[in-house]
Length: 332
Image (cartoon, rainbow, N blue to C red; front, side):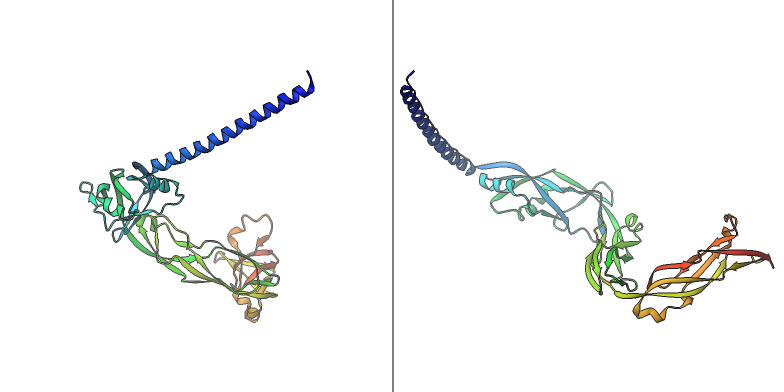
């Protein structure tokens, strides 16, 4: 076949293809416009649907706490225009509606003094006032909710800091961190309150600190437990340190009155890091080193391990020698 004929055929094909693509583009454009108009028309109509809505329970009866898990969402049967419903359904974070016990009447179940129920139909007005004016609330599902209450008690407990602190070179903690307030009042069901002896702060993370730091730190939430304070202030005192040495006597404990235990040596040398401001406060009497006669039967040799039972709060990195002492038992 002549090449010129092929070229003519190709040109005709390309022109027809271009016309076809142009027609399809025009068709698609008008189809998109028609679809958009149809969709907008549909959105202008009213519809009835169900929305899963977050809920928060507030204003509990005084001196009472709810027992068990509460629903985090309720189904609201609503009527509104399509564009309003679309906006609600596409919202990533709906503001929870508040279920206020001071607004909605509770009814006891039988003669129970702890279990109550509420008809959600009684909450329609209360919920409607919290929704947009362009949406009508027809029903709340489920049609009733059951609540169990327990009486609350109060208790004062200590607050303990959780510290994850690193110090700059030649610096250390200067005493016990100061917490304000150092204790709080908790309230809740007695079965839970009785199990709590202290409240621990959220972790305080600091690195390479070389001066006193004061931070406001939150307290963790505990389900069904109320706190008198949600935050406390923790002051972490930091100072330079130096190494110190003292010699302290070793005391024998738990020995029968009829026996005498002679130990060798009678003193141990203690080394520790002490903050500069307390260097001259460091005294041997602030330490207590002991050997326990009760462990003689467990000793495989004529030696007993030395233990440090007491030490001042302003030192760190304590070490001592010797770790063991020899002994001689005599009758009195």
